[in-house]
Structures are given as structure tokens and as C-alpha cells.
Image (cartoon, rainbow, N blue to C red; front, side, top):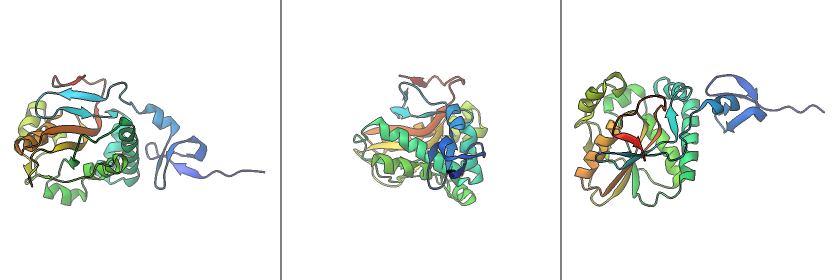
Length: 228
């Protein structure tokens, strides 16, 4: 008797394959085993110590191909299948990380109103919702970005520092709170660091960072972002 298997389309390469070859399959999307093998995961300790107001940044993946391609499809082209896979894989990692009881809540790096209206969504917010559900840590958006500024990806290191300086504002009291700041990716850590600065000035006791991916392992890391 011939057995028919459901056919899937990989969110990364776009190829169609049988269900037996799927690495992760969910209601809306999946990736094939071939693409899954190409993802560069952070091995060993994935908690990167930082200098300044943010204590550390946790990242499950390196921002290299093909992860980068999947991310860009979601961030700039509204590819919901790609976004779903990013959220699922990130949530799976953080679910295995252990307890997040040290934090009172998670907050997300905000977009300016202009950028949000143009894109239609905050990609970091959508990804954070997967993690929030996985680890049982609620999201409270206590930061806003009053004015639009150039994308960090278009700037040099020093320009990035100037670009995020004073970019965020606090919307309510966070005195004595322990907060996990979530962003999509981290290349230099400057955006997360600026968010942490605002939270610390607002009285936050502890601030940690979490992202889906960080600068690739083959790229030189900034001095302030190093392995523990």
C-alpha cells in the first residue's frame, strides 16, 4: 500500500519536501533539515557579559547566513512564515534556559511611531511574544521612542552610539524592578545598552538583555561584548 506524506515548503530555502524531512513543523511554517543544519547556534555559554548598564545579553543564534536571510524576510518583507520560525526557534531555546524568576517582566525595544506605521508591526514585539509564552514572563512595554532616527544597520560604530543616545524614554515608574529587555538582534549592544540606561535611571534594580541572534562568530566582536 502506498503511503502519502504531507508536503511542506521550507521557510528558509523555499523548497518543497516531505514531512519526514522537516526539522520543525507547525501549523503555518517549517524548515527542512538541510537548512536547520546550516544555522549557527551559540555553543556553550550563550550569556555574553557587557560593560555598562546592561548586565548581559543572551542569544541562541549567531547572525550569519542563512539565519540573516530568514530574519530579513521577516523584518523588511513581512514574511510571516519566516517570523513564525524565528519566534518558535527562539522560544524553544529560552524554554530550555531555565528559570526567569529573577525578572519581574520583559520589555521590548520600541519603534518610533513613524517607523511602526511604515512597517506595520514591531518585529521585536512579535518575537518577544513567543518567548513570553514559552517562559511565562509577561511583557510590559515601559519604553517609547518619541522620534524616528536612522536605522542602526546603516551607521558606523561611533555613529550608532550617537544615534541611540537619548532615543528612548520611560513611560512609568520601574523603581526596584528587575527587567529583561528584548530585541531582535544585537550587533554592538548599543541599543540594548541605551534602553538599560533609561531603565536604570528610572530606578530599575537589574537589567538583562535577550535577543534572537547576535553578531556572527566570524565577525570581530566589540570590546564591550565578550564571552564570559
